[in-house]
Amino acid sequence: MVECTDLSISPSDPPLVAIALGSNLGEPLRQLRSAVQELAQTPGIRVLACSPWYRTAPLGPPQPDYWNGCLIARVQLSPWALLQRLQAIEVQFGRQRQAHWGPRTLDLDLLLYGDRVMTTAELTLPHPRLAERPFVLVPLAAISPHWRHPLLGETIQTLRERVGDAGIIAVLSDDAGETTFATAADRPLPEPRESPESGGTPLGSGAVAAPNQLPRILDLSSHR
Ligand SMILES: Nc1ncnc2c1ncn2[C@@H]1O[C@H](COP(=O)(O)OP(=O)(O)OP(=O)(O)O)[C@@H](O)[C@H]1O
Ligand SMILES: Nc1nc2c(c(=O)[nH]1)N=C(CO)CN2
Image: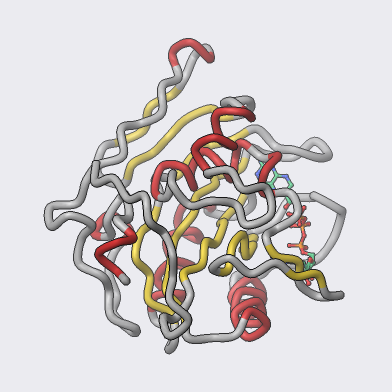
């Protein structure tokens, strides 16, 4: 794994963002993979890394298990424009707003937008429940362990270790098949795979690639 300790972003750089993906209705894996494609094809969004997919126990009312993952992208959209694009993709995949924390075909949350900290009626950054959720922190730590939470000052890896693996049932690497975890003790995190070219080849805006062609771990220093 390529270590990256300096995650500073100069003001002229388009910001890095982290986006969480989740689904537990319809065909979750197909929808999640298609959502990655939709994002990668959006002008102003360059997808840099995508985590494996994790089957997770539902938080909230009784409902089917979720599949969850995260991606990192560089964006040339404002936080609000990006949120709008995420919500448009959710609608495109048949998302209907029903019960609080209820089941859904696709959920796209904006977790981090560079080091922006803000609270408005439509958007809070960082995502207010980021630091509590294993189904977000486990995939995010797999691709971006060194990113520092701008409010808490701790790395994603530290936060991920603090919340543990509660509710993580299985992991599916698109190129390695599914591993089901019987007990927490059997449940090591998958080794993040270093991409062949130290951080991998970034996708151009508009490029289409299967998630398994994306680098598994992002060396942020090679994308500055
Ligand atoms: N960082 C953020 N990412 C996505 N939505 C956000 C964010 N901050 C605030 N929101 C607002 O939250 C509203 C509800 O979002 P959503 O329906 O996806 O919530 P949820 O997925 O049910 O719950 P949770 O936010 O706990 O995951 C959205 O309409 C959006 O305006
Ligand atoms: N495991 C899991 N549970 C959830 C999830 C999710 O993505 N994964 N999303 C929810 C609404 O945001 C509610 N509950």
